[in-house]
Image (cartoon, rainbow, N blue to C red):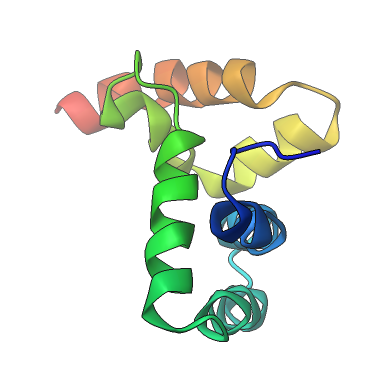
Amino acid sequence: MSLTGDPLTDSVLPAAEVLTAAVRRGDAEAVATALNAAGQLGDAGLHALIVVLAAMVPDDRRPSRLLAWLRDPTEYQRLRASGVDSATALTLVYQQTLHHFAA
């Protein structure tokens, strides 16, 4: 069953999943592995990976909220490890660091 309706974008879904998790963990080796996997399909594979990743991003959130985990990655990982879902963890980190980054 196709998730995207296109064989090429379907083929890069595993790389997109690995890349997303690797970036959150700060795992440069896994990032390279995911990019290389998509790159095996040439430029078209890398373009498909970009499109799939963009499609996975909620379009009703500001970049400052989506990237809030970068403000305190340790706290974000702690929240996720304790069972907090990613959206709630993002909001909590954003709120906890709002005053620090507003100054």
